[in-house]
Image (tube, rainbow, N blue to C red; front, side, top):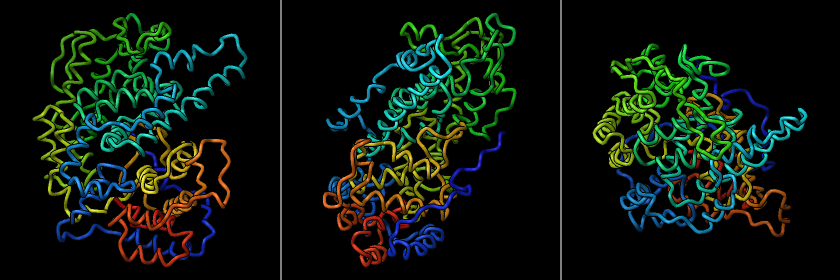
Length: 520
């Protein structure tokens, strides 16, 4: 078991610049104390209808936009949940569709991306400097498009549960965009291997991830060859256990899932030959290929189950075994409860979801419905108690203040400062969602700075890169009263009263920087 890296948000950081506002500085100490001392609210009266509306908007969505609370109250939370569980029934706004269609990198196939931006596009006869310049095209041209696509959908899509689950699964099946070829494919990975299956069947999702070049490259399975096979030579000369280990430890069974090192080796042998065909991509074909000459053809026993030597089908059989394993049901259910209900998962709820997972053969929609129908989900002790991750905080702030994302660079800059850049976690376990990972004074101070700069009417997020900021006369700061109406019971009356006593020009920033808004 490898040691996990210390999370960036927990590490010492440089001094953060405070907004030069006495009111903000005056409230800072109280905000930090309140946020750090916050504890789960004792069980009490059931949630009111407005609180229930806020709860689903905070958990099934990235918080309310103006008018959302009233709309969910009008339609009822039960109908809202049912609607969100079936995103295909929710039309996407024409403007959002047009914005996504205007991102050319998002329309390209993995083969096209590799040919246009990868090694085939590098001039073999070129100088070292020319090759380096060619390598920089992807981070300069593709990366901003992929980031923009994620942020546009997270902030503007009415299919909010689909966006929440896309982020959840992209993090669960984490790939690091900074690893060479992964950068070309991370947008397609999320678009075609994650999002279509986010509310579907877990086995389908697992298979889509296993076949995608981003995962094959990130965890090196594309290089893996059975010992002594005809194709085991050059860079393909040996068995690679990376993907097999993470497939069990992080993607399915969990670290306590009952597998042994021998199972890791066996799974690596099963998946030997699952690779990326570079020549096929140059001809425009799909990148996934099974290289029979590199596959270990010997019979195998995986997790106690004998597998006949059937080549490629061995891998599909292994994925079937993993997807339907009780340990996988328990591991996935635990993670879902931690995300949607509490950092400390209720064993009874985990057991209920595990049973649903197994009885429906991994129907994620059915598992989520069981979760949202549970009394634990609706308990007051789990209401407004989860500390937002940096991503949840930034996206919910953009939604609440109704600020459009026209420039993704400053958003990802802020996320990087907070320790959670998009597709930026180096190791396979992905980002943590717990309060312990993100709550510290320096992180709160950075959030408060971000909030103040976001709402002043001059945020670079709201204008295309290179466009000059508006003059003071033309700037349109976020209205604090409207922001309070949007958030409803998310901001306690005593917090709102303290904020509204501050100078008017800092009130909106104080709302988004308050400990109340840090919770969901």
